[in-house]
Image 1: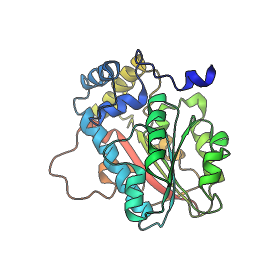
Image 2: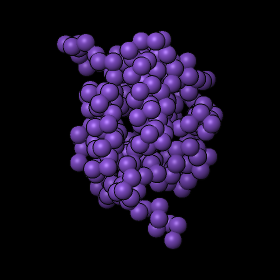
Image 3: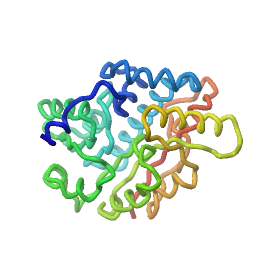
Image 4: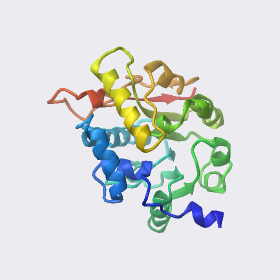
Length: 271
């Protein structure tokens, strides 16, 4: 019975994955998820734009890893629901044999993950909680699909800010990093509170309160706290920066909103 419950989709409560799907204009969400989006938009009207920016950053990162960095194994943690562009699509556009394992604990994501297995022989899905790195790294899905003696691209795109401080996000990341082969890369994007009394800091506090009121797990962290997630790694230029500043596809024609400034991301290499 417990196994059946894991895969039961509860449409009476918002889901982190489905809320993000609403943020990027997807179709795999319900009214309860859109209600969270509207509540956030009351203090951050640019929320949908920010969601799309996050996805664009992820695609640029995967393009760099699969291209210049030569990575052909990708572990996408807290991957969320598929959208127009996904890790496996971008990676396999550059290397048709690139292998991808998506990990998420949301039943809606699991349903889509199982569908991916039918269309892509180099892609796998594992239903697991990213807060359990030892379990994930030892799973049959990972150990059979990857060669962990070779470099891996590990992605935490908008996932670690749903891990509470008392769940030790730094320790979780250290377990993953310790298991990676030298030459591996880690990509992290995270909600940011500049904690400087600015309008952006106020927005971070208000948005966190609203997320937690409706979903119970969302934490804006300072630059120093986010940098700690990369402990023991060598940052790739331009380092830990706003997502729109990480190797953009072209110049910006408009000034970024406060919401866009409230995200930091970076890519780092394990020496």
